[in-house]
Image (spheres, rainbow, N blue to C red):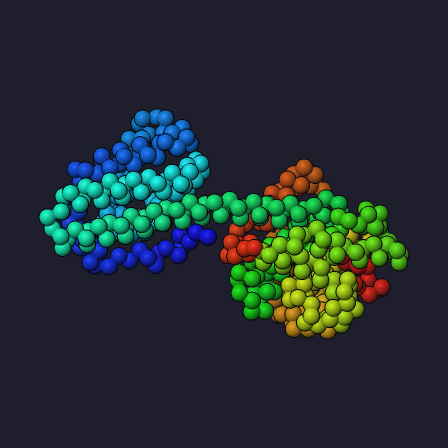
Length: 404
């Protein structure tokens, strides 16, 4: 797998000997660099997308001037500073968006290096001690420039893949929403509360961000539960409860068995967010720390938000009553250590509730839906830390309606 741009920064500190060797090239290259640029672009324009891009002769003149300045002020002087990185990022992303084939771009660099090597060898042939130093320095900076440019191109490609993955995650999370009472803001609140508790529990930001992305898929399996059960205004009978309790397994079957950490976490959450600390949950009756941490965190956040929300079978609870319910079920439904963290961070969880509150019921439906879905879209595809790494490859007592 190609190296990302951030990994190349460590290689950009050119040693003094290389800089000294490059210093002898400035006066030599100045009258010759335009011919080298012509050779570079002749090669690049053999690629169909690049040829379409540079149909305007004035654009070619402009881009050549930019490339000339890039080479003469940065590459061939060994000056890989922040300006160099910003320009290289911009150039690489622009090439990617326009569909310039990176193989042609790389081969164009090969042409440039060959052309420069030939010119330098002819000019410095009578200086046998200096010539090899210049050629080594030249090869080094050209290699670094090509590698950084390729890494930017690779980063742009990965960004597209990551966005596709985030959109796919969003689409899956939304799928269950279309079939039941839980709105998209429930998904946002659960995701953000899970992240807050994970950080407070000592998990790193990367893991917490992954949990924020994965937890909205917890009830995906409700796609497989009949509407008559999901939307029933009264208590479920034994048959209906059995149907409802199948949704964790259905969710785990829908989410692919993929090695990417994010997908694996989402699958574990879907399967375990109704397990209980005391072993009386479903579908497998796991207990204690046999329940994955992400499932234990999601269980608390999902129940808390469900209690605060309106359902076909109940009115929303007050924050005080919902928090009291979580505390009362510490050690039974929920991990006692996580309940302590939940209680200690109630102010932050209430802030999340306020930030993603449902719009008033009397708002116009279209406006409400548009605002809600826009918010959900923006939040769920917001890029977390380390998304590339992420994508490498509870039943409540009968006296209380099931908040799931």
